[in-house]
Image (cartoon, rainbow, N blue to C red; front, side, top):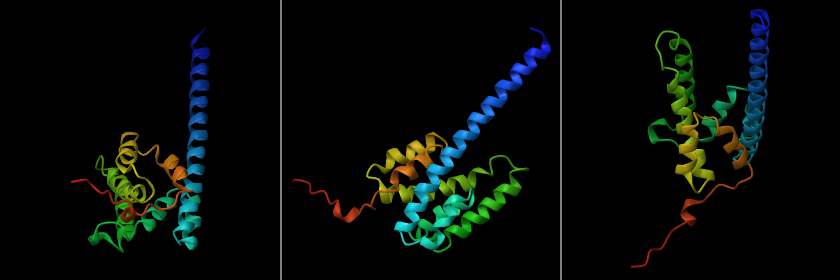
Length: 161
């Protein structure tokens, strides 16, 4: 095997890897879009449900779904704060390392409230999203799509004295 054959094999392997990652990304996008679309419809945001199908725009749908659940100082402006953070991260990450993480942190913060609304085991779900660097988020949206929101007030645990 000469160097040309080795280079050709390397490029073929690299192309297969890129193709595989592209297919995985498309599958994850479709799973997230289906989940977000159904959740938006169920929560009365039918006019915004279309946002689930557009990459990057779907993150703004996530912030819209939790707009009234976040900390009091962010209520009503969480989507705006996320948008400004995302724009700043896009422009400043060329010059300042790790600035891009700020928008991801806000997205995970917003996703926490969705987990809280649709899962009884919110700590495990949140840790899973953080440890996998948000790779499992589309799968979780897909799993939450048919669940009804959990009413935390119905889950009062009586302790024996």
